[in-house]
Image (cartoon, rainbow, N blue to C red; front, side, top):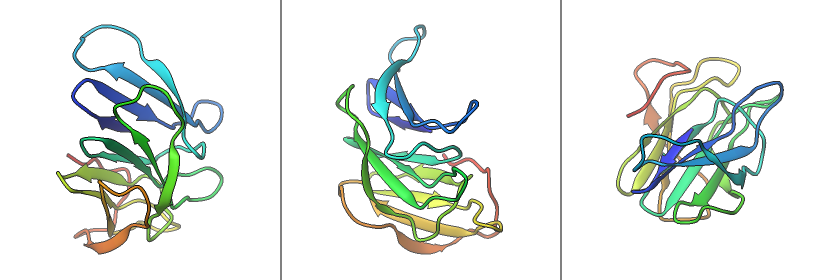
Length: 147
């Protein structure tokens, strides 16, 4: 999952032989170089989505052995520090997509025991609060991408 500011990009979570809580960062002004460890998500998980504003990045949903509704945030201006739990999605799900606007971030679709058409949103300037249901996708689906 990828959050960004003007210099650094952040990847969080995933799965290798177990669920990952690792957050890595890269300098997006350079075309070479490896990622560095920024610290950890609040919960190790895979198939989560990322959205970001100009200062904060948010990771939503995901899966361990159960679907998660967790929303974490990080300060995009810092290269150290663990993610902090911000609140919850309206529906626990994984394989969802994230889309960012200038004020709001949107989490759409996913899988929650069945394919989901739910679109949630959060205010990218707030560090507390649950997501709000915005409406529905035209088709319930998971593992889509947002731009």
